[in-house]
Amino acid sequence: MNEYLIICVVFAIFFYRALLCGYVVDDVTWHAKIAEGKKTKFKGWKLKHKVHIFLYGAGIFKNGFQEHLFTSSIHLINSLLIYKVTGSLLASLLYMVNPVNNQTVLWLNGRRYSVCVLCCLLAWNFKVLMIPLFAFSAFIHVSGIMLPFVFLFTEYWYMTPLAVILGAIVGFTKFQNIYNSRKETFSKDNELQKLTWKKIIISIKSLGFYFTHILCPQKPTMYHQFLYYFGRYDRAIKDGYSLNFTFWKGLAICSFLMYEIIAHQNIWAIWFLAFQIQYSGILTVTMTVADRYTCISSIGVMMILVKYVDMLPDPYRVIAYTAIFAYYFTKYQPLFRAYTNIEEFYLYQINLQPEGVDARCLLAELYITRRRLYSAFSVIQQGLIYRKGEFKLTLTMVRVLLELQRYDEALSVMAIAIKNAPVGEDEEAKEAYDDLVQQVAGIKLQVRMGAMNRADKRKMA
Image (cartoon, rainbow, N blue to C red; front, side):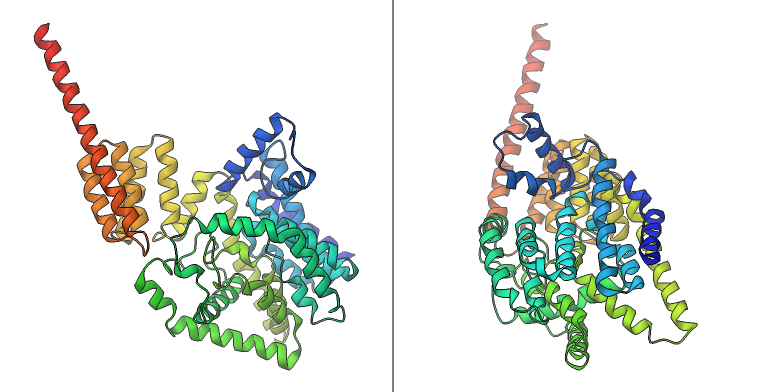
């Protein structure tokens, strides 16, 4: 009982600032969507839709405080369940304060991932409930779909076929629709969604990235640069499939995990591989990598970490744990400020990764909406210093220049964007350029006509 109390006290001390966070990224749009449903008291909505929305993310509660209190409470429960599952207080605390899990604690729309963690941990604690819990997890989100596979390595292996069948009935159609809708945002026949044996290289690299990122999250962020351009440019595709240092690092980590599984029957090494393999670049429809994709697999990594740190004799063991907790604590602190509002969120990403693209473009779009046009110009201009001619940055700069009525410059920048168009988007970029030329010509004609009309009025006066 004392261990559970310790977890609760550490959580209260560490995460009270989470209650001061607000709405960022998708939270804003999802909150607006739920607000529309509230106006009609969700009239015509089926019960399953209401449950899914309640556990998806922002919008159900009255304010950000209540939203974050609910989401944070799920994280606390998960941390308590980890202790019950593993018997390791340190693994539970490390998971709880590891900044890699920021998106399931501080990001409201990461709630669905946290609910899947809860389902998996409850199933692992109360194995007789695995089948209904897995089905519910599959209904909420895809992140827990490998749970039946892990059960194959337990005495409850016979539950796996039933769980898979029920999970498919509950979740297959929904996730097929989600997959198809998200696939439409990518260019046709793109490399990210090709099933080829070469993807083994990408998977090995991704598993290596995730394992080291969980252990030592140097840059806990929403937008990672790892394999960012893979699938977009020929040179990036070639680099992705190359047997470079990233591959050999990933191979070494995978070999270590296989050693743990074969030599020591380490279920937590299986746990990591099972829950991370689905996010290892085999088939990508959202992001190549993301912190939230580690929400379940990171439990396994924390258990492996504790196993090896515990092998150290004192006082080195105490020193190691102190250093790890201090590192996690230090890395977590900027995240509490980042999640207070959407502008602070983007600024955090940019400060962490100045060379990043997505955060800059999204911040510029936000500034355009707020009519802070020169702020938007500055954000993109700085980005182009780091990535000269980058496609997304140049397209965003075109929009900024159009808003500033600097039409000739917008055309010049658009021409640069066309030269750097990703694979499969060349024709679309050229069509956009032709449309822009016509729009600018029309605007210039209107300006000239307006000037002529004003001149005529002055003559008549």
